[in-house]
Length: 303
Image (cartoon, rainbow, N blue to C red; front, side, top):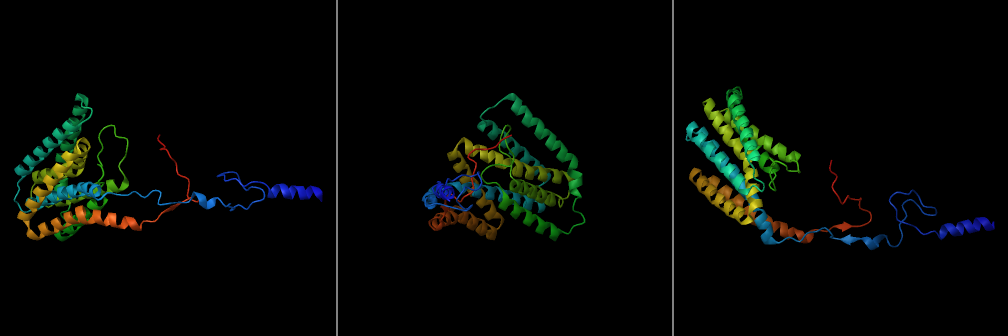
């Protein structure tokens, strides 16, 4: 009797320890917690207080890409309306390609002849393959009605804008460690399909080659170029973005007044209303962290 009493006394005096892996502790239930359980509770530990001006400046990247896509749609509309011929489109392609190369070379941190040659070879292969596939693209949607083409193109462009990676670029520079996400890849593919749908409604194969080359240059490489500009100089990024907005609004106003009002409203909503909205709802954010949270790794696992 005395031995069993000593065992019970030693079990009740055993101190409970908080361990992740160790099984049940003698004298305590599996879900036991002591009085110090709520001492580690933290409220709003990960809530970031945002500055209105910083959020507005960050939203400029979204407006910048909205203007880029708007200019692409304008070129599509003028090409379908026979305002732009194939020679004008080819001249536009050469101008964009040269400008993009100039920006990449200007903002490159490590410039070398090998890197330049690598870019030239890849773009040459890309243009050659695109020219060879132009006859297929020209007859790709011959059996589909035009109303279906316009509806699909509109849906794909909207999907592209919703899933686009506005913080970076889907096409990465050589040596980049981070990989594109699934949503950014879906966004890029939807823009490519939309470009092919528009190209299939053009009258000649040279038209198809020129408009697809233009679209792919913008959707593939414009985010990379703008990202390099932003990384090189944030002031240059702001100047380029506001200049692009002004040029886009001017072209859209000449194209259609209603579209101009819609685009202007979207830009105001993105740059003014959304930042104010985000700052306003921050005061309603309530987050509780404590020992009941799942363990999180504090380091990245790489191959």
